[in-house]
Every structure is written in C-alpha cells, then in structure tokens.
Length: 252
Ligand code: APR
Ligand code: ZN
Image 1: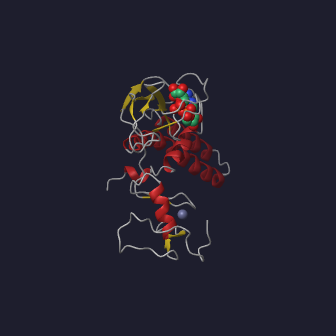
Image 2 (image 1 turned 120 degrees about the vertical axis):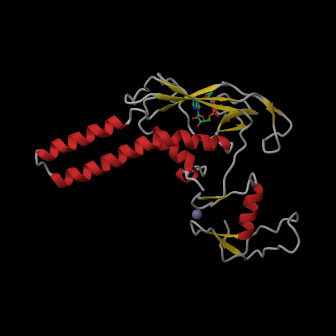
Image 3 (image 1 turned 135 degrees about the vertical axis):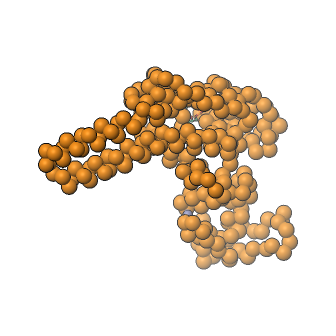
C-alpha cells in the first residue's frame, strides 16, 4: 500500500538465491492489465500464497499463470438425467457427483499432518443440459419473421432480435461450457478446500470454495436450488475469478 515513488517496505527474502537481488525502488508492470507494483511487494505476495506459479493482480484480480487450489483427492462423476430443472423446461439435466474421502492434511492445508473430515459427501449437483435448447432459438426466429411481415418497427425489432439471439446463444453455449469449465476447475483443485465450514462451524473439514453449485434438483429449501435465472452467468463469473475461462477450453 506504499506510494510507488517510495521504496517497497519489503526486503529481499534471505531464502532467495544470491545475485538475484531486487532493489526496493524497482517497480514492475503486469503485462495484460498494465497495473504496476513494487517488485518486492509482488515477490512477498507470491511467497505468501500457494506458490503454484500463478499471480493475481491485486488491483483488478487478473490472473497470470494457472491458479491451482488445495482440494483434497477425490472423484468427480458426470451423469445425464432425463428430467428438466425448474426454470429450464426445454432441456434435461446434468448431474455431477463429487466424492471426497477423509484424509490427512498436506503442507498446503491449514493444519498439516492433522486429519480432515468430509461432511455431506457424496455431494450431488445439478446443471441444465443443452440437448433440446435449440428449439427456443427457432421459436424466436419464427416470431421475428411474423413480425416483419406485419411491418412493425423493423429497425428496433432487428436490434431486439439480434440481442435476443445473442443472449440465447450465450445461454445455450453457457450450459455446455459450465460443465467443461467445472471439469477444468476440478483438475486444478479449485472446487473444494480444507477449512472451516460457515454452515456448521466445523474446522478441518472439506468445504465449497467460492464456485457455487446447485445441490437441489426439484426443491429450493437451502437457496441452492432452481429456478435461478442468473445461475449460469454467476457461476461463469465465479469460475473466471479463479482464472477458469473459455480460453482454457481452446486447444493450445
Ligand atoms: N448447497 C450448495 N452450496 C452451499 C450449500 C448447499 N446446501 N450451503 C452452503 N453453500 C455455499 C455457501 O453459499 C458458501 O458460499 O457454500 C459456500 C461455503 O459454505 P460452507 O458452509 O463453508 O460450505 P460447506 O460446509 O462445504 O457446505 C455446506 O453444502 O453441499 C452442502 O452438504 C453440504 O450441507 C453442506 C453445505
Ligand atoms: Zn491489474
């Protein structure tokens, strides 16, 4: 939080190799977002984290490198269910089952060497599937053609239609994408962590890690069920804040 014109108040850690010294005045610039930071502050930030080869800009949260988490060993299974979720009548359901058995905490966890518990596992989660989603888009197009034939405010309709289709496309691709991105997040150990449960207060237990999942299929007693028209958008932004974006799905 010092001014950049003053030197960093961090010192070069003694563990760093000799000859690689960084001066307290040296300022670095993040390549994608352009934010600036004292290099020694940046180094201190890295050494205080999980040291996984990734860094997050403290100003705008842009992630550099591949952020990984501390999720313990377990299994992610994916099934298809031929039943619709409330609010998604046009498609079936993807069911994700997370299984994590209890174990001993590693050096990346809050109390290394101590055991961790696993409450409520296997955890069942639900996503809308995309199979029949296209039908909605077709209906919109037919609606537009009818309106055009009626010569009603063509320009404004075209604009509306364009944004409507974009939004539907986004919605349809988002459904497919969320599952793929959740798989990436699982591989990067970002879905769960070991810590204190905010629901039960239990310590040294496996807990959700900021990427919200829907754990109720046909009810919404916990508030983590359907309908929730904003869910796909919200989970996409939670994934993005962990560095898991569409870019991760592109071939290298
Ligand atoms: N379903 C999905 N997410 C939940 C639930 C739930 N029933 N309860 C809480 N969360 C979300 C919270 O909104 C919070 O963002 O998980 C995050 C972490 O909350 P914790 O209580 O610390 O998480 P955890 O102890 O892992 O789980 C609470 O979730 O899946 C259930 O069986 C699980 O009952 C347990 C509950
Ligand atoms: Zn930034």
